[in-house]
Length: 265
Ligand code: ARG
Image (cartoon, rainbow, N blue to C red; front, top):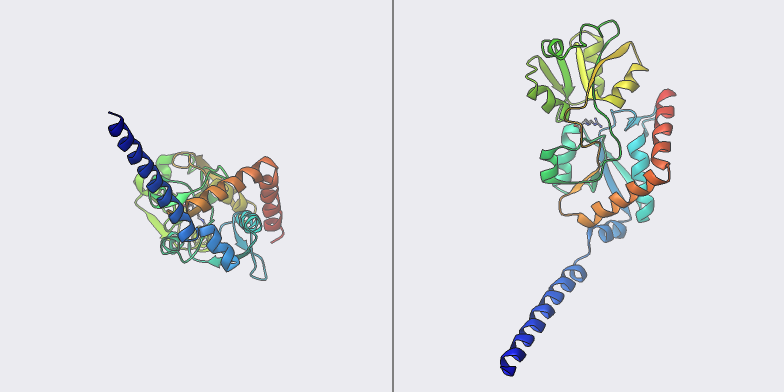
């Protein structure tokens, strides 16, 4: 009886020992992504700088905005430099998949499909979708049925593109860049542009545009930061940083600064 008990104990010690060993070797054997970023001395953020106030270029080409301020705070916290890689929106997540970049911060909305393939942070901003139209057209497109029958333009690869398809909008054009979308509206090639509400609000201030309607459907997850699916340590760190920035009011301040900078453009 005693002998049996002893061998059982031995077994347990062995199992526990092995588990502990396995755990230890997996962390000490290879550096985690945060240590690798720190060894490189820089964190690479990919964005599509066509989406004020999230990210947009100044006259001299420098990319600024809400997302850039957040990225700078992340870089500072990790003690590294920030490098901003500009890529068209539909190329951002592919660049993250192949680990060409460390994170995507691009006014990116959380959705189920992205959640399956990437590490998505907690939301750092909440915004619905808005239907931006030319001033004077707002009554015409106040009803979703009228929008469905209109020529609509969305950003390629965006959640608004998926939304428009789900709604059965058939006169739909998907373009890689926000500037071209606005150009379509300006020249009458499209009647409605669907973008994140805060972006639409920014454009209202920039030209003869108004918001005909806003929807919350599909935007419930908010705007998030994406990292590689395996980079759980980085995701945890990013979430901690977002929580701190939110708690100390810096997040709000970053938005105020971004809107001010945009206003000066
Ligand atoms: N929120 C939308 C999405 O995630 C559009 C984001 C577009 N961002 C940009 N920087 N152009 O699909």
